[in-house]
Length: 174
Image 1 (cartoon, rainbow, N blue to C red):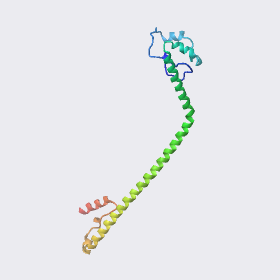
Image 2: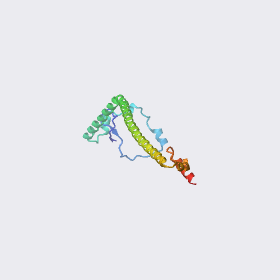
Image 3: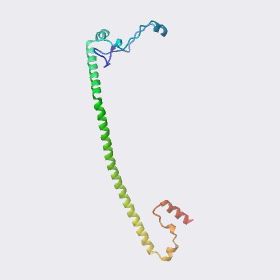
Image 4: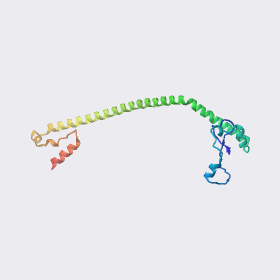
């Protein structure tokens, strides 16, 4: 047995099982179960400070003192954690609400910027379509009425679906 860092130790240096072991005789499990002493209850498993000190006679006093301080520090941290748990729940709720509000605000900004960009592109596209229509009207005015009758209506640009334009143009070429 040796000093460990178990903070559930009631008082005195915390004790634990080390890696070193002693060789003992082996025996069948059935025989051990027959001769072993009765199982101890919870209170009987707790070691008092004098029993701990006796088990750790070989450990220097400075190490024992350090282990006790370390154990008390861990106990106090656990106590603070348990004490602050209700506050922690409220902090989590508030932090979650803050994140959701910020996310919503960023989304509105991002959405409004996206809408502005889409509107700008739509306006540019509308201007380009108007320019194409204007140029087409000017070309139609320059053509002879007889030439106009010979032009297939499928060859005019359908601005709503470019796949129809390609299909119609290829169909008229055949």
